[in-house]
Image (cartoon, rainbow, N blue to C red):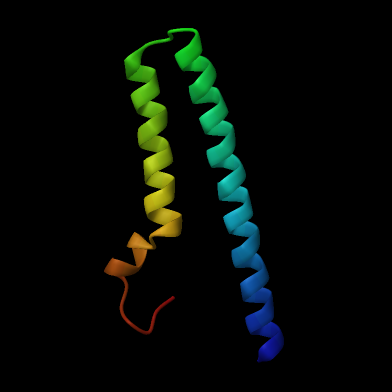
Length: 71
């Protein structure tokens, strides 16, 4: 039981690291797009994608629509 819980924690940490890296890459892309005046529409799309990732993975909004015992 403890090993299963430990494995679940490790996969959670890996997911957080991956999402963090994706957000960092998107931020760098967004920075250079802003530097070269790509356009507000594309910048807003990247900002919306970053917001969706933060809301879904770090604020756990998906848990709002699941039953209490389900995970």
